[in-house]
Length: 253
Length: 152
Image 1 (cartoon, rainbow over the protein chains, first blue to last red):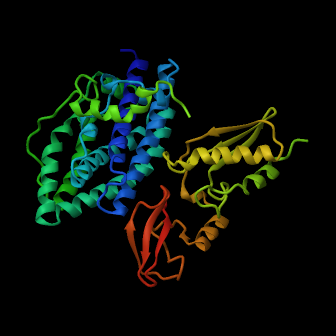
Image 2 (cartoon, rainbow over the protein chains, first blue to last red):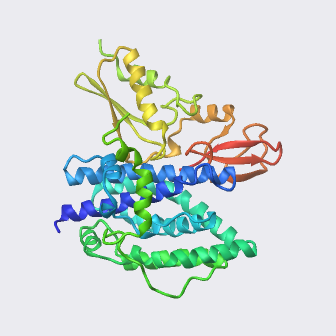
Image 3 (tube, rainbow over the protein chains, first blue to last red):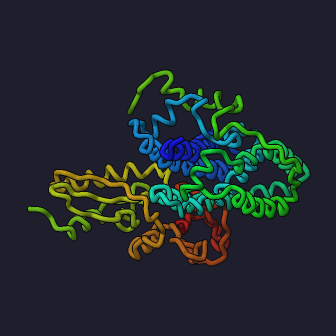
C-alpha cells in the first residue's frame, strides 16, 4: 500500500466514524426522553457531521479522483465504509446510546490531541477544531453514564447491560493493522498500545464512579475499520441515510 | 475606486450573525482576514462549530453585503486553523450579548452572572443549548432560564 493510499484509508476511517455515529445519534431527534437531552443529542450529531465534512473532504482531496465529501458519504455502499463496528450499532435505549457515546468519546478525546501534532498540517488543523467540540461531548456522555449507572436499580441494570453488549466493540479501536502502522510511521497516528493505556485510565475512572463492572473478557470484534465485515446494522442504516441519492441519483439543491 | 480595507471591515461589522442578530460577524471573531487579490476581494471566514448550520448562511450574507456595496468579485475562503475561540469575541459583542440576555463566555467555564437580574446563584441545566455555541442555564435568584455563550 502506498503512503497516499494508506492516508486515504485512514481519513475514511476518521470521517466514517463521525459520519455513522453522527447519523445514528441524529436518529434520536424528536424522540429523546426530555427536551434538553433531545437538544444535546442533536447538537452532538451536528458536531460529528461537521467533522465528517472536514475529514471526508480531505479524504477526497488526497484520493485525487474528484470525489467530494458528499460523494463519499452518499455514493458508497456498505463494503466501502471504514468505520468502527461500535458506531454502527443500533441506538437501543437512551442508556445504550449514551454508553456507546461515552466509549467513543473517551477514545476520540485521547486520539485527537495526538492528531493535532500530526506531521500533516491539514490533519492537525481538523483535529484541533474537533478537539474543542469533543471535550464537551465526553463531559456530557460521561456525566450521563455516571448518573444512570449510579442511579436507580433499573437504570444501573440497563447501563451494565449496555456496557456488556458494547464492550466487545472497544478492542477494534486499538488493534493495529497495516494502515495504522503506516500512519504511525508517517508521524500522523499515535501508537495504539499507548493510546489504549490512556483510554483505559480514563474509562476505568468513569466506570468506577458509575458503579459499573468492566467485562473481564478481552474478546474483540473486528472488521469495521478494514471494511472486511461490517455488522448487519450498517447496511440498514445506509438505506435510510442514502435514501435520497438512491431514489433520485445525482439530486442537488 | 477601490474601497480601502478599513471601510470594508466597517461594512462587515454591519453584517449580523444570523442566529444572534445583535452581534455582527466581526464581533463574533469569525472574519479572520480581508484582502484584495487582484480585483477579487478575499474574505477568510472561520466556522464557530464545525457543524454549525449558520456557517453557509454567513458566507451568503457576507457576499450579499459586499455586492450591495458595489464590490464585483468576492471570494469567501474557509479557514479552520487556528480554530475559532470565544476569546475572539469583541468587547462590543460581549456587551451586546449580555444586553440581549445571553451571558457572555467566561474562562471559569460558566456564566459570571444572570444576564437578567445579575444574580450569581446559577445552575447549569445542559451544556447544549438552542445553537451549538450556547449552553442552557438557570438563575436561582430570579428563577429565569437563560442562554450562556459557552467558552471554547
